[in-house]
Image (tube, rainbow, N blue to C red):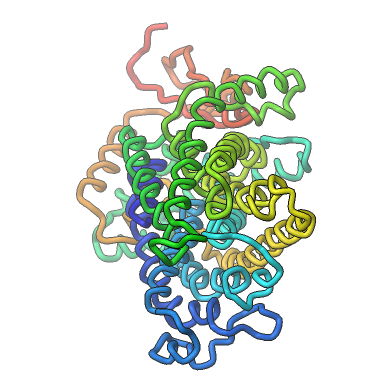
Length: 541
């Protein structure tokens, strides 16, 4: 599964963040295995306290041969299988925090996820004496335990860490505390710009200067290079990104067969048939991808036509009207997440319905996050959290023994247990994430320095500065020496309103054509500095 997540994330971001993605997924496996072995497994599957909240472990801490005294099953085998689950939950968090969260901070959170956050939820749902298990809560293979926990934890972390530099230039959904949010965003962007200008104060840069890797001229070139990236943000993935993402989805899809089918812990069982579970998994993923392929365009057209007349409040829901392979890939994952909870108890036709609704929910939710200025680089919250919730609620309807389709008299109780379980699991994940990230934010440990984010943190944190990168920034600096930078303020359409250049607009021979600013979200940049490069040579009008 980790291989698939690496490919999906790499296909959605710029190449200079690939090293960070690889390191985060390695940390998931390294720290996750140790933390889950020391405490996590015992917290999840040993005999819990009287309330069924947390496994007490007894002599089970740091897994040893003492397991056989408590359990009758092969727990070494169970540990191996459950490690894949906790690893997946941590990887989801990494996708939401990619490009900007400090690798050290993420490593500690991944360790905490495997040590405590995930195991407690697993104890509630999968331990035979867990309190949700005893109430009849149903999540067969982890829509809530794995995907909801990872999705909501990553979403809360993403809100605290903040968006990528340049991702949002204005408020997307003005009706919610409009002025306060706009001032906060402007203050955030101004702070990031100030840090970029003071790149010489960055500790890593000081170290590079002290050891002779950087000269003072290189620092100046780095500042110019970073400022150029700041004023010209580009969040488009690499040209080969769709290929990596598609391959990653196929790898995950294959892993999901064993992810769900293996949760039966048997190859053949008359009451819990792995072949039916895998069949439902195939159909759920296919339905999710098909829903995005066929319905995303009509949904986008409908939203634009119906809500565009309502003005700025609904422009946030505009979506692309073109087909996108990356969106279809995420639609497949959305369907797989949705079917994970009920793949053992629903019929194949119901798996198609569940996957289809999951794909439609995925098509809508990213627009909502964008409207709230929440940055989700790979749309992991829309795939995992939203469809984790939907997967657990879908069994209320489609469970062939206790759901609405069965006409069981326990339907009302089943509904209450599932809803209550989803709420409790969400609150637990939110609180644990806040407890970790708020102190990190207060200490400034939550996010990379803006220069690292703009040029790639791996250049400063992983290995030595490459000769190719030095040549790149030096070439950029030398090209900038013979250029005069003129700053303008633009309106919402990118037209020049005011010349705010350092020479008061006296620069000679500038062209009268200025490219429009790219629109981000519901509103284009209203008070944005555009850098217009004017060469000394006269330009014909």
